[in-house]
Image 1 (tube, rainbow, N blue to C red):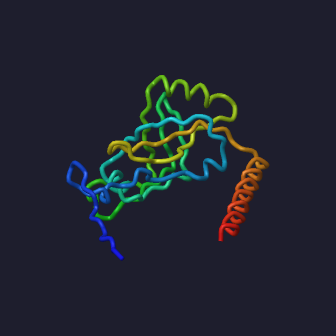
Image 2: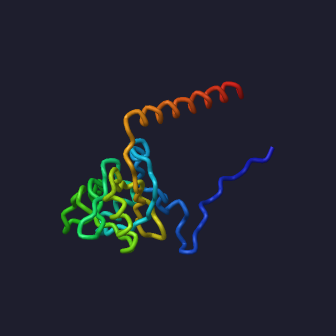
Image 3: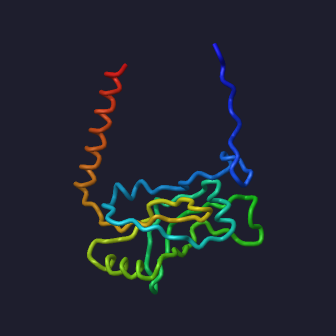
Length: 172
């Protein structure tokens, strides 16, 4: 019986191993899918400081309490926590919950402003992810769910779990 040897991590064109690369998804806002109907998704860049990028590479971010506001025709994300790591930025004070600017094209922002001014629409951050070494924030145009809709979501989720359990028991 032949045994297989463990393979070494593959190298990329820059010479680094693939295991050194940060995961594509940094943080996800699962609560947004529960509280809102997501109608549109937009990918926005983020204006960050150096220590924030280093902290994001280590996955030290949380966006569940975050929301997006429009001020003077610009988008800002508020409530996004990026926890600083101790070894970086001794000369710049690290503020974990500061307001960060989001970057979108002007025509996209104008369209979103028109939709948000309609009744019941809001902008919520859905996830933070890497795209070509840049941090991107996926922003969703969302409409709030009523309490009974949330209960329906819970019932549907529990129904799916029951079916999966039954299938798992049957396959054993």
